[in-house]
Length: 84
Image (cartoon, rainbow, N blue to C red; front, side, top):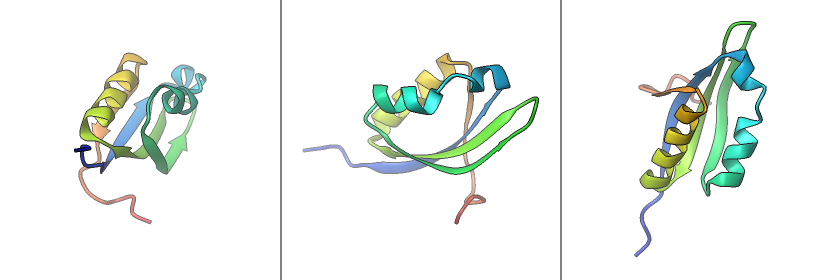
């Protein structure tokens, strides 16, 4: 029986030099996980994105681990402040 899919939202925060890499593209090629950009902002010092991932819990955890290896700070979205 296939594992149930779930949707989980995370804040991804990273420095502009990391943002020069095509991280979303690379992630989408490496992992079979749906994603939706729920919010994003950038300035000279920091990039912040709220992403919603949909897949099995195990695959989402693999994506989170991969982002952290890329130098991205990853934190779960605690409340639905980015609903819309």
